Amino acid sequence: MWRLLLIELHKIKHHRGSKFLIISYFFLLTSLALIASIKFDIGPVKFHLADQGIFNFPYIWHLNTYLASILKIFLMLVIVSMMSNEYSNNTLKQNLIDGLSKKEFVLSKFYTVILFGFISTIFVALTTLILGLVYSDYTEWAIITTDLDYLISYFIKLVAFFSFGLFLGVLVKRSAFAIGALFLWFIVESIFIGLMRWNWKIENYDHYTQFLPLNAMSNLIKEPFTRFNAVKSVAQQIGETIQKDFSVQFTDIMIVTIWTTIFVYGTYYILEKRDL
Amino acid sequence: METIIQLFNLDKKYGAVHAVNNLSFSIQKGNVYGILGPNGSGKSTTLGMLLNVVNPTSGTFNWFDGQTSTHEALKKVGAIIERPNFYPYMSAAQNLELVCKIKGITTDKINEKLELVNLLERRNDKFRTYSLGMKQRLAIASALLNDPEILILDEPTNGLDPKGIQEIRNIIKFISQQGTTILLASHLLDEVEKVCSHVVVLQKGQKLYEGRTDLMTQSHGLVELKTEGDIEKLTSLLLKFEGIEKIEKENEMVLAYLNLDINTGQLNQYLFENGFVISHLKMSKPTLEQRFLVLTE
Image (tube, rainbow over all chains, first blue to last red; front, side, top):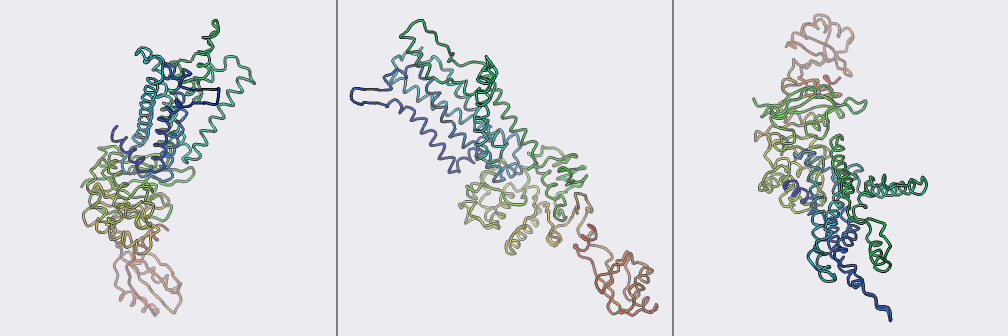
């Protein structure tokens, strides 16, 4: 396993574009904390985001993992290009001739995906913990450790998304087109969901659309903003019930894990079938 | 003798194209083999299958008597195919380090091999700045990193200028003198004739000949004749002479292929007695090229 991981890291380490994207990505992840410093101070209107309670534990776990996962597209570019470049440089062929099996080749990429996901998760966990400790109104241990499953969701979400990137990179063989294919897939999925919801008026449409890969990934961490408002409005008008369940659902984790498996095995299957 | 590769009825079809047709042969340790064939005869496809990058349609092959899987076997092999494939953004040394990691060997032979192919001074330059000749030499250095049991070369001099071709040939000659088994695919006959002790001749994916190179060129030879008289009559006379197998006409010249050793003096006397005067009579041995053309006709 370490051998395969080191092989892949050697390929990335010397690639200037990838290095730049990776460094930018982790810089942006860290600078999530800078949201805290947003202050409006225009005459009578004083607004300090940190005072609004959005950094309160345990809500901050939800907010930060959600915001951090938007940045995953940066690493996606690295992953798609590291896969498709192996085709355009013909180095996949050379790797196989040098004695790497196709299975090892896919595994070395997948281990890297896991490593990226893992480091991102650690990063987000630390940033959030520090931010929360500084700004949260509640810093009791029991409250801090509530809702940590958002971190698990975040990790699973990244691994699934990046595995999708591996799959598209192998399928399409060109990085620009692979990123295009990702967008295309996103649009097709959105149109499909829209059609189900508005045109065919299927009542519990989300029962079916939860199985679509990108939708399933986004379901893992639902948008946190309405929850924040809801929390506030509940405090004001008692009797209002929160409609949406914001917590991490086990079925979502299952669906996304299955998609990850499909993507990784799909990548292997395509490689195995193809002549180079 | 130790067998390195064995092919059993290997077959590859690309749609309607039958690239490799029921091919069997074996490679023994210590010999230098040439796979000979015109472009599109299935040489590269055959090597591709042995090297794990092309899936055979049917048939099997064994590395090292089948004791290891193909990808494990390839760690003990050095191979260069068609054109050199490396990461353009890495230097020569970084590319070779990666190969060492894949093959699971130490990196301490990198400088030695770079020196062998005369690239030591450029070791820290990016691969993309290399000329084709340098790229090909780097590929050879890479293939030699593990001191391979067998070196596989597919058209190693393709596209190079005369100087580049000379450099590559010298390296190959040097390596073969070290006793390394070599498998060389080429359509350049003199290349194969100079280096290889054994040949496999392919055409349209089929094996036409397998054996020693000197046995392939060894035959009773042919006689070139020229006459002012009637060529048809000469032909029929020649065919009656014992030892002549067949007759071909090439411009003004009549070529008589032999199946026995004959004496040209006797032949001349025989023709003269039958009223023919010969203006040119010469015995010659066929080159590999002529044998190859006869085989692939």
